[in-house]
Length: 126
Image 1: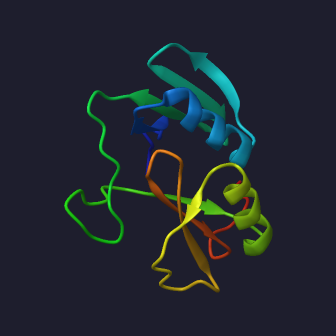
Image 2: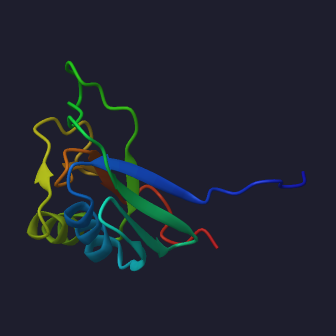
């Protein structure tokens, strides 16, 4: 099959693009590619992770609620405890509901987006 497209990036809405970008920059070891008042793009791992200011931003509720989760990031890790400790030190919080804590840790980033740390995804897809 011939590929005609590739994933270029993922954008996360927030009321604080710099704060959220800093969180993911340190968690994932990414570098700043673009920095403006309303958008910060981080590069690494073959795609851009962009944080963008949205007026009236309301964080999603997880696992259910009036503002449903629309998507989440899965972050591959080798050591759940170590990765969770780092994420928490950077400003994440642990979600109350943990469906499979031995394989996945559901955390909430500083802007309210749920994301998962997991040992069930390969660290290297190359």
